[in-house]
Length: 351
Image (cartoon, one colour):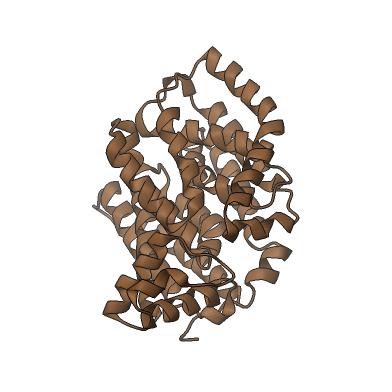
């Protein structure tokens, strides 16, 4: 039922217009109200999904039922088509002491995921409604069933201030927690070491060099990392081009560079930009590599902040035109033939 996603998007845009019309209320309070309303709506959809309507969810429900009924000494013996990480297994076991109903697992993961993105958008987006729209069309749908990785990603969002403030131990603890949920989160360790880089002429020369070299090095590295883990080795036989990720990341970078003096970026916004440069390097190096999008998601996700923050600096009416083009592109991406085929059967428990 793709209609659920369509209604979701329409309601978000409606909320944005309605809340913006409230008189005598500061922009900050309007943004907070908008994020809270959208967050509640998205949490309900994310939590109360019918596990039989999306791929992977049957594994999570089966795993939760097994873990809840097993002794602590047996929980690491679980053997499904997907090998669960230790942190995920422990989380399942802890929740099973509260309830043996799998919905508590959905509730907790949904809460952390929606909270992580809500906080990210509220704190850093120049156009919150557009960030929520991008989240809905680019991230929300896969987050419904790729639970472990999106939980790991949401956890990592809470590590961003520690990167800027150079608190390595706290950053490392958050990353280790994320890795315990999904092994691919290990790639985010490079974020801490990227941040001190100065953005100048040498940076662009180095960036161009890495883009060129990555085409020949990233693919073998990713294939090696996948082969190390049984749960991900099964993806080695899949066919994938991942060219869409590269195209999106290149367009976002171009838009941001066009509208922003990147050499003057500081703090968290400098971090977002540098992480997105890393996304381009990984994307071009990983073209044709199965599951590369899983690794790159940790960096591509910041498009939902970079795009609005770039557009806000473009003068009207050009800004409106670019916003319409961006929305059209992401709608086409969300409702592509492949997306409809994969997610068209999505249902809620109460529908």
